[in-house]
Length: 150
Length: 378
Image (cartoon, rainbow over all chains, first blue to last red; front, side, top):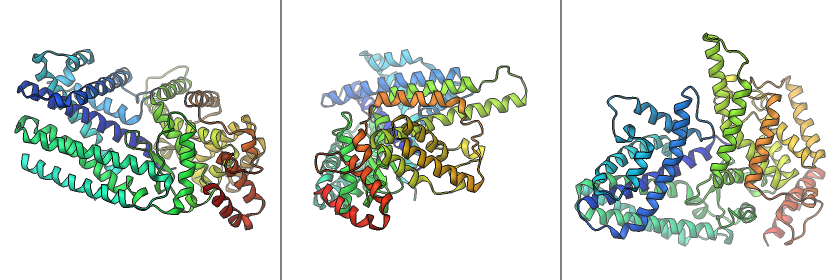
């Protein structure tokens, strides 16, 4: 049975779900700030928010484990998610911290995602942009493994 | 940028229309219909996403261009995935696919959590892409997909799908095993020198490796649970290439390995087969592997990646994972494989029967198999 294709496929699918959710929430936040009605996306927004919160809860646990045991891989997490956590921690150590994604706690990020306050939207947009960049960069090798390269 | 994205999204719509046409017009076996329906619904969903991108672009908001760009990339990747791999089972369908499709469909239906997941496979080495949002796709070698003998290997791949369906619980169990292995490998006293660093690095690579190994061993156990003796025979026959690497690997190879050493997998399967009440096949397969190892002069050595002391923890974890996933259990009469009655018996009886027929008279097996296949597929 071949190199762990199951691992690559899972990682590919997870990245797609997360990035789609990010895009939906980001567009909603920007259109809200511009005063443009976006109610046709209401259900998508609810699903995207639930998906992203679930992802962040899991990611938080993996990051915490990676932080506690920096000399080894994360236990009980698929290696691709563990590697993403390590990239996150490495960016977090940079100074000045590149963005709100790295300078806020997961509780604060959760608060941003569930906030109804318009004042929080700008912070949310920045956070989503940086999370997307982290996930998309990390997913590149999965995309190549699945779709190949010419 | 807006024009570029609009042009790209319009091109994607054309691709999706063409793909939909091709999928719809393909002549397929009836077992593949649910998979085709699933792909068509994915195409519809992608068309909706693409139209949404075009609508968003029409808002004229530069601020959201980065989001639409990302959404366009997402659709592009999915269209490529469909075109490159996922559409192949439909676009290149053949009446010969019916046997593998029937086996995959049967195993999916036997499990509550996978019952509604459509069956599909494409040519390739044994593997699976366990996509849950679209649909999983199995890969299987051309020759083996046509006969009965190696069909049980699909049950190993099905194990990966079960793992994804119970991912969190499975990951937790594997995490506990990794912790246990880490504790076992920890020396009673630790030095503070280069040697200690090397030991720590080795310990870490062993623990890391066990995430993938545990899943593979779980899938082996799923295969045996569902198929009984026929799985062990198919597994040993297909993976036993009589390569030295089946029995022994250098530490550097073990560190990068995606799968446990095949001999170790066979050993653990043999032990599980004994416990499951299949002692004859267990003894036979064990003896065969020992004979080849003896002839090659290979001694068991896993360089610390596996040790007898780990067997209890590994077996217990795999047992717990099986309890969580609860794959269908091969019955005693199915395992005996004495005969097979259409349509009341599960195909497991036939797959075990097939190995019995093959062992007794390989020369006449093909003729028998053709008739059995015809009866199975109706």
